[in-house]
Length: 392
Image 1 (cartoon, helix red, strand yellow):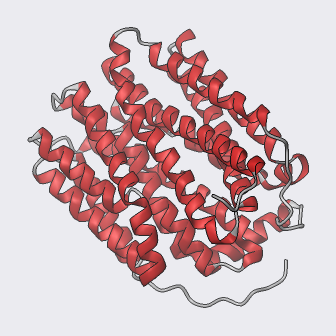
Image 2 (cartoon, rainbow, N blue to C red):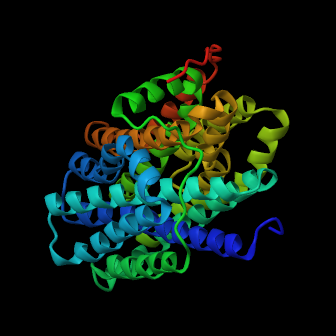
Image 3 (cartoon, one colour):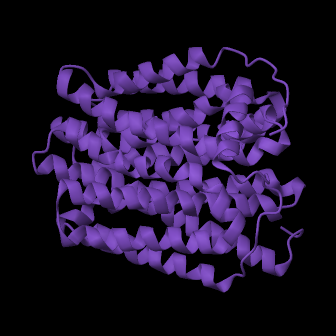
């Protein structure tokens, strides 16, 4: 990072620290609440529906993110987003209610999206071109490491049900406070059109250019939410040990951490489309392998690690693929749409997973995941048509 000034270097590592703790809270929250509701006897479909609150919040706030970021700058948006997240986490132990916890997850979704969109855009704005890919990879790795560590704290629930929420809230507060050590800045490269009509027009144009690039973020959203919110329910119903569930989920996240940089470098060399197809087909194979051998715990850990190696970096691959297909003027909108499609996938995962568990009790939940990835793999074989750039 010798291209960075001292101020930029400090800013970068503070933003990385903030997003790693955010990853930790998300990685812990999804399986934790699912396990608590399952032990309380809540139906799997309602359990899955409750998990969608996080992503509904993300979708609700997405169309309104560009304008306040341009007006107020990065720092205030991160402050508001972080504040929403850690206050919501600390409120969970006060009252256990399906509706109340759904509302808190909604606010966490809004806060997380504000935090991620601001930090991601800020890093891309001051990173030198020759280090942009590496910096975004480090950003993704920091989130992945935090997300992988989250499920390892699930056993704390056996000490006191509210303890994981309190620990996560305190860690988020500590990381969030670091943002006050850096100065505010404003995005100078974002599109000048500030009307909602202009926003929707850019959304439509960007989808026309790069719709196929939004399949990988959509797939990763489905995987992340369904594996962390529904798989623990399935596992507990099949007499899996709670500590083993946390190890299995951490194995998937670890696979994504290990493969993120190698797959990114491979996509630079042989092309984004080939690597995306390799990842999706490989993920479908890995979950088929897991479904066939799920009664051996350590084989299942290996299968989840293998699946993570294939599909754990599909979100960042999708961002790179979108960048290849999208005109420069629409890149901020493309980044925003990657987050939106990730959220749509995240909404689909718990809902489909919960319904599957309720109506297909005799089948492994992992077959649903495998078939879903296989369908997206075939859809990704379609090449996008070249579009003309129109001014907006």
